[in-house]
Length: 201
Image 1 (tube, rainbow, N blue to C red):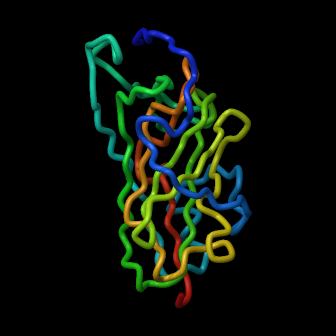
Image 2: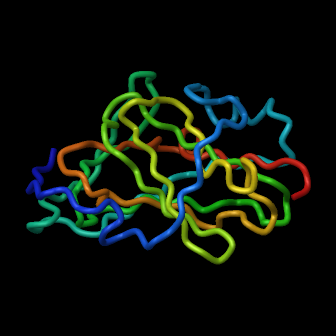
């Protein structure tokens, strides 16, 4: 377990997040809090296409004053036995980046996006940066009071992304403006991010 030099909290978007607009929160498919796998949920949702997005974790810095220790994130299982990874929030300095690529083209239809919030090692806020319609946006998810699948990017074009607005990249880092908290994510594509699409945009 690495030690971190705790610094005063800074603006949550500093050092990583460009200015953007966060969509309002809304519930879509009713999966909030569920813990079934991506395949189990999307197999019965009536979508025309669904993607189970695999997280890709990149260590940006290690073994220095800002990011002490060799290991910057850690494997674990959450309270439901799901495989997860977690790290410490690190103020304004990024030590890791977690990225997801969306598999479907923007011509497929309207899509929703869901993130698995682990039960355990998840006490901080994740600031997702995502690129849609040629612009970068930000969505904040406080993991502390929630667990299981949580809707992301909601109420963007009345609750879903239309064909011209599909995100092409989703990512977050550990420089969330907090120190000493933990942020966690599912370790594989069954508990990463769900992209579920239906109809014509």
